Length: 295
Ligand SMILES: [Fe+2]
Ligand SMILES: [Fe+2]
View: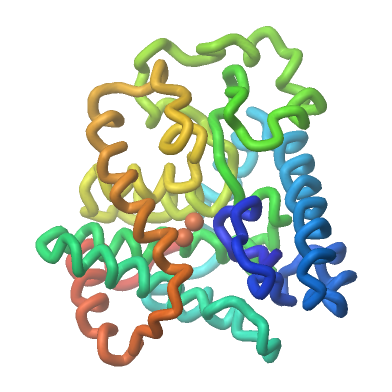
């Protein structure tokens, strides 16, 4: 499992089992045998389960608050959106022939697919391009966070963990699980309060949302919703947590569902000519973002 896949539990093909630079040791340990697909499949299940065990134990209200406080300082670096796309691309540019598609291909494939279906929604094209940039959290200069704090499905903290969350059983070892302030249906929130009031488990979605917001992006509310909640599968696939949503969330959810198709579409092997499409995306970046952002 490469750290840079969005959803560890859904890595589809054995060939996706690449030896990425940021892979967990237990994955590298069976790297030699990863062409034995049967073996790989069961090993993958184990490593995915271990991934979610760590995620579910460690994503607490305190942890999330600590991460927000730390990363809100935006004191890591300054760079443009396009520079970040290139940075993320380097991360997976490994000599391994079985490596996943470069990240920039995933970003551009999603963006171009959205552009084809919604030619007039330029904000959606840009949103697709930037939705995964928060994965730079894996890099040493961004704190080199462990996989469980970067990728995987996300969920609210501060209220009961919905049963639809993958590998829900591991929450029993989360210190919030038995905290009466955090383990009721609404927990610390009000019914219908709106998801912008809700603390989400920490990962690349939340980080990119924070970076975009604090750097004063002019992207519309639906774009910010997509960036922040694209890994919130318990909501957009299982329909959980509607009791925390407000009307704006419900409208934005429709866009997120559309977007999700393009996020998954990127598993296709259509190679995008980066130099050809770059001028278009640079123009969108200029429209919606400052030239340099603090990260
Ligand atoms: Fe993502
Ligand atoms: Fe993605």
